Length: 82
Image 1 (cartoon, one colour):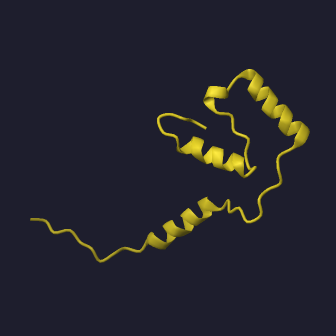
Image 2 (cartoon, one colour):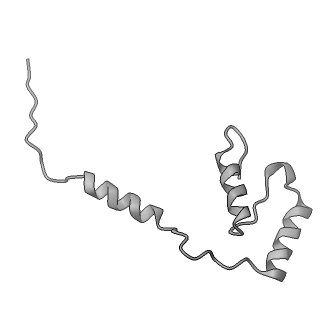
Image 3 (tube, helix red, strand yellow):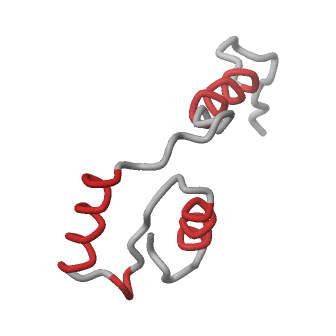
């Protein structure tokens, strides 16, 4: 995750690491050795079990919400030329 210009990605990644969902590599710790160790660890130990109830359907919800507000029917609005 990036740490500049803002920290949101790093904050989320750190929270998800605490839940055992991801194993992030932060830019300050990113080296060929740390990448190799992370890949080796995942291949050797595997990833932790998925968390039950973790909703990964955000994009579907965005589409549903957009569809609720988007009306392809023409509206009764009109322009007045002065």
